[in-house]
Each structure stands twice: as C-alpha cells, then as structure tokens.
Length: 381
Ligand SMILES: *Cc1c(COP(=O)(O)O)cnc(C)c1O
Image 1: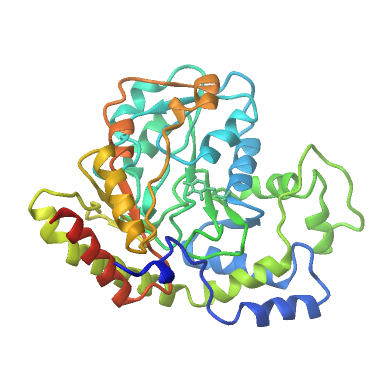
Image 2 (image 1 turned 45 degrees about the vertical axis):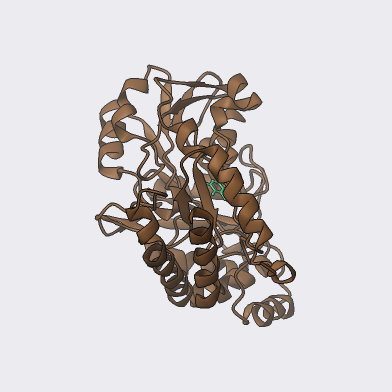
C-alpha cells in the first residue's frame, strides 16, 4: 500500500506561475478594486473565446446566477425548472428571489437534465429553465431552447464547469439569455473565488452593470460616460477585485495548454479503465458525439452506493483521495421547503449514489493516473 505519506488529492488549484507577477502588477497599477485592467482583459478574453455579446466578471458563479435571476425579474411564486442533481447555487439564486424550484429527472448517460421531461413540468408560473452542463458536457440545448421559445421562458445556463466546452460547435454558456461560469479553485481556471455572467442580448448589459455595482451607474462613470454616479436601482456587490482577475488572467492566457493537459489525463483514465467497463464492473462517462467537453471531471459509476463506499475506503488506504458528488437537492431540507420534484425520480437518486469522481487537476501526472487506475483495478480483482 504505502502511498499514504504521498496522498494524491482530489483537486489541486490550477497554478501556472505567472499569477503572482500579474497580481503584483495589479497592486502596482494602484487599481485593486474592481473593473481595472485585468478585469477588462479577462472579460474581453471570454467574449472573444465564447462569442458572447457581453461578459461581466463576478465574485462567484453563484453571484452570476443571482444577477441572472435579478435580470430575469424573478418574483415570489415564479417557478424555475432545473435538475435536482446539481450544486445548491443553481436553485439558491432563484429561491432567494422567492421562486419555487421545480426539479426534473436527469439522463443517466450524461447526468444532465432529461430534456424530454422538461415540457411536462412547465406551468403558467414557469419563468426560467436552468440547465446544468455537468462535467462540462453540454445539455441538449437545441431541444431546451425550442421549449423555451415556444413557452416564452428564459434560459439561464449553469455553465460553472463548462468553460472551453461546446455543443454543436457553439460555446456552452452562450445559448441561453444568460450563462454563468465559475472560477472557484475547484474549476478548470480559477481566481480563488469568482465567476462570470455571459449576456446574450446587449440590452441587458446596462441593467446588469447597475445590479453588480450596488445599484449605481458607477461602471458608466469609470468609462467617463457620466460625470457622477448615483443610485439608480436596487443592487448588490458582485464585482471582483482586479487582483483576483489578475490571477485568473494568467490562466486564461494558458487556457488551451491547461485544457490539453486535463484532456490527456482524462483520455488516459478512459483508456486504462475501459477493460473494467467492458467486463461490466464499472461504467465510464458518455460524451455525446456533438458535444466537446473540457475534461473538467473524470468519474466512474460503481454498482451501487455500498460498493462505492468500499472502493472509497480502499483507495484512501492507498493514498488516493476520490470523492462522490451532489446529494440530490429535492431530498435535502431546503429542497423540500423550496422545491418539488416533477415526475418520477428514476435516475437522480440512483445514479448520484453510484457516481465517484477520480482525482483531476492541471498538474496531475501520467504516473499518478496509472497508479490510481491500478488501484481501482486491484479493488475489482
Ligand atoms: C462550482 C459550481 C457552482 C458554484 O460556483 P461558485 O463560483 O463557487 O459560486 C454552481 N454550479 C455548479 C454546477 C458548480 O459546479
């Protein structure tokens, strides 16, 4: 056994080497609050890379989603359709505005919302569909956008895990009215805590900037468009520091390299674990042919929760820190209070109990992946 002193963590925050230099530059610019040169560089980079009309950097993906809920003018009693298998933020942002979360089952192959079940959950109170691109693998956006168009609903994409990933050649986060990225330390690119709001239609930009700047037109003031800034509307503080943006910019500059490094490890995992999958012992992730993923996550599925618990203990003994993921929201106390599950929970609970994420990060080595897969194979032998 014996790897314990040298544990392979589940995640190591991405670091390329240039972050400190850029943060020092931000400090020397004497512009450490928001909307400085690095905030601008990051936003422009994301706009160019994804093709979105406008990107606003935020203090988190949760806050980007809250901004989307404010822009969608979500009110008490409105309903939002989302998967139960997601992070709390997808629901929180809307529930905070008084909306009810309506959970729909997921597809067992991608763990994304089952697009064929959405329409049946639409009521006259439905305002938004919030698909989550789990593991950076796209939801069926053509179907979802068609339902939204026909029922006059807005779409807010939780693309927290999905930067650099696409569906039919178009960047995830750019299909819906709003798309939300995360730059938390567990994501492919990071700024510690941070995120971005992608806005498809430019007519929302002014309002978004006001909500992000405590309800003021300070963004306009900084651009010299008005000679003083004033309280224009309600709002909050969702603008990140330029020091954090500087950290992120170092990683955006190396985005292709970081993604390729992750992709190499992802493909190695898949190759080395395919024999076990062929024997029917485990299941591997499925990537629909029209989706380009970003190697955000590599997971396997065990037979059931009991087997996963044993595998977890086996790997920890051997110095590998792997983790399971979401407890379905509808089964949690707040989920019962603020939401309801529409239709049957065929896959959400069952599949969430089997899913097990293996270590995945920028600096994970080929030898480490070989070691990890050897241990998984040893468990099943
Ligand atoms: C990470 C994550 C979030 C939250 O991102 P923060 O930047 O930490 O607010 C939301 N949704 C999903 C699916 C995530 O993976």
